[in-house]
Image 1 (cartoon, rainbow, N blue to C red):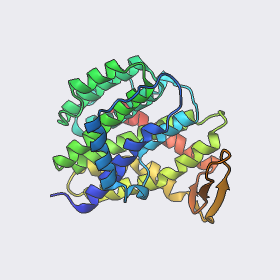
Image 2 (cartoon, helix red, strand yellow):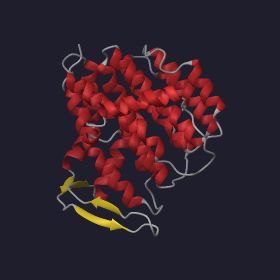
Image 3 (tube, rainbow, N blue to C red):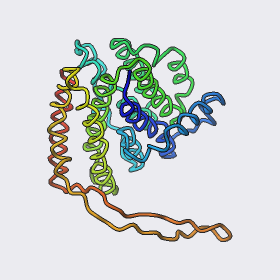
Image 4 (cartoon, helix red, strand yellow):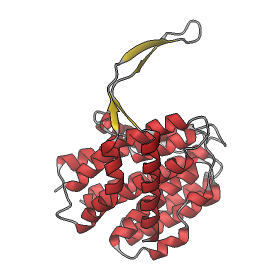
Length: 306
């Protein structure tokens, strides 16, 4: 039977994936609505169940929304080549590879790359079947993607649905170790995309702060992993893999701040809005960023080359 901490951690991971679809740019067409009433009701129920713990940790999936918010350019060269999937022969490499590919799927969908989205959705389905996460990506989901290739929001929601399906499959089948390894792969790929796209684009400072904020996500992931490393050598190996990244995040400064409340101006006749900001937050120096970038690229390239 699964422990309560595992279920809470899984829920904290899933809720940002459900919500992040609303944080995208206005590039491309928007579908009037991907989900039907029953699907929407199910998501609302899930949100109601877990919103009390959502604030505990951001999810690696959130990092992808920042890539779009910063209005960065899509770079096909950053994707893990589809042909690499044939090189992953053991459970650990396949599961981490799946985490990498599900992140690449979301990245392609975020920028409305129709062909890449469909191609990577097929890769994700094949790899999910290889690690026996069956049914997470089915023919219905593939067909839904094909019918919505013109709509960025729909493609991104479908990529989220694929990720959420896999997490809930693992929860239902008592496979927390798979969640750890899958999430580690997704986390590394999210970092890899962000550090490579954080250039001279007018949003660098914002992206650096968001990278620093991932300290909490990584802390939660590693705490979760430590709780089962004795039972699964693959989880223990993942912890070792992540050490170069974890050491950087352990060393970054958490700046104590004060909470501020300001009034935001609105249109005449509309109620004023209160904007709450401040508080303690981690900061990432330029030197720390360069080290994080170097270590992330090295780890990611090691993972995809197996």
